[in-house]
Image (tube, rainbow, N blue to C red; front, side, top):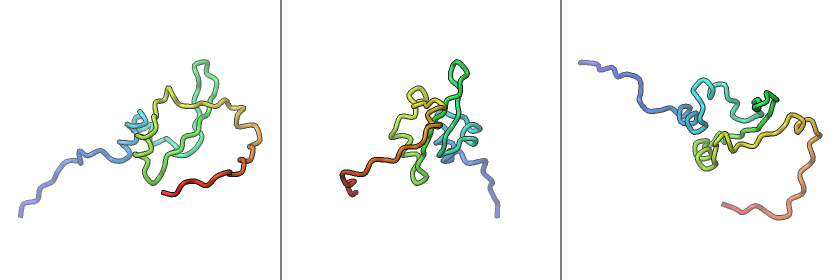
Length: 98
């Protein structure tokens, strides 16, 4: 019986697809905290922070549904996280059922 060995799979892994959707390299994606505050520097070198939330259930769908263009990301200044967090207002209506 002859055994055939095939090279590495040509199909991209989920990590590769997510990295491409985020416009990141494999190494950058490996260092990415999928949910959490990330620190970046603006053009003046001042630190800015932003929060990224990726659904663990179906991240690909979420990433393709919302535009993850880095130029359109919302950035927060460091002092935005120094203020005490305000409680959310009470709900005035129920969420629709699926």
